[in-house]
Amino acid sequence: MGLVKRLVAESGLPLFGRADLVLELREPEPSAVFQWLRDMGVAGEEAFKFYMLFGGVPYYYRLAQQWGVKTVEEAVRLLVAGEGGPASPRGGVSLG
Image (spheres, helix red, strand yellow):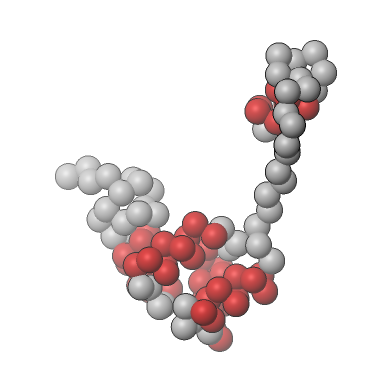
């Protein structure tokens, strides 16, 4: 359980009882991800590769959609490994 959730869910803690709405978010089902990929024009083995790379994290599929990425190789090159890529470990910040 995360810190914020603990603060509002466990009695005796400062924010207990103050939450009036709790949303439980989960990854989309794989079928929903594959439908999204089909809508982007990606299907078959390439869609499976995308799912193996990004799992069920919608953020990455939205980036791929925004950047017009159609292959996993493009996704890695442009979004992850590329200098300033939005999903790079450097968070898009150039160190050089």
